[in-house]
Image (cartoon, rainbow over all chains, first blue to last red; front, side):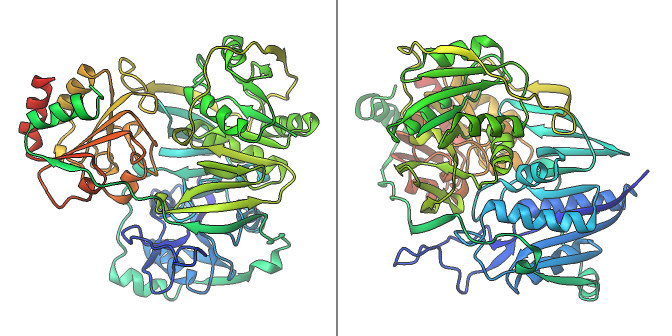
Length: 257
Length: 304
């Protein structure tokens, strides 16, 4: 029995290779003219959804993203990777600081889940901008579903899934009932680069836009950002000439040996 | 107002990072109770001995998120704190959702009862955030706070009545595997020796293990080394892995990507060994050695 539908959440974030800058007035991280990409952990989630389809374990993969107009580019990337259609929840609120709270994000996704009725929701374990890592467990709780966070491997078998999870000490394998929310960790897979013909095809795949304000979720932030500052720079140290020099410094100067 | 600390544990022992969460709670100048859930009573007894703990509530069976939420509401707690770990990242947001609030994650400073500092963008920015919610649920970055003493407290342990989790919330555990337990835990070790892509292979990590064992330390790795399949993920140090702050951090063959630096830059003394003099890791190292690691590490090992 294959799954009818997998919903995969993808987020548009500052590209992982960009060194972010905090605005001089302390208002926040600068986003103007900065390269944006799909959050790396969302790419892994997206890849996993497409592999389920390719293995014949799922009939349809639907990508969903919350964000401004440009989040459509992220959704087109998901479609180019192989998702069948996309849902864009439109908002002008920032999603890296202030703006939409973790609870509001989970509640908006809950509305889409209730409409689309997927058997499985795949998301990244954390976004590399806000760094909250809260979407999967919060969404699972709102839906009353099972969850598996930090997935390193996923085996879907009818109404259940076996998930290998990254733990603090190593890994564990758990069996969860579907429907469920699973969050992707680093080792789940290596995402593909979309091929040019697929990028072209993606432009014609259906993309539905829904105004976040129309979904009946309170979008007022309850965590307000009062200021953003760069971290204190660590003082640069010295270059030692040899291993002997290093051992001497560690023993006599730093006194850590 | 009072704070409920959710103890983190591995089923047998309370984690030392829970002691740091107690310190964070103490900044609020309120009373602190600890909830030990899903663990035997021996863990609750450990919590009761910790300095400053006024009450310990204990429940054996893994509780449901809704069960904990109603325990928080009935107890009238204004704050719920837990130390950051993969374990707490799994269940704390679920509890927050059950309470109908957004959690404040990864706090590294407590300014007052509703204002906190938290890193985001892999630690490249620090946000001061103010929450206006009925209950503040926060996870605490343990390396940012001193640990309270694990001795000196004499709290009583009280059995708590909290609904146990049932399917679908509670998964069926099939198996569990953990890495080398001979070495100290990465997040609690006094010394950490980490390897990066420059190590070349998983086999080459043996020399870091030998060095770590000589120093009584733990072995870590950069995301690049984990990504390349050299070592398992639980060794990963960085914003998307573990955050460590040992007395001595030795980075070997690690270039120093932003996300790695975020996970180790609070270490007391940082040593970097890399043959590339331009590697960003040298900008945060107290002592930098520009050398071929395959010569320098065995030599260092021999001279210690």
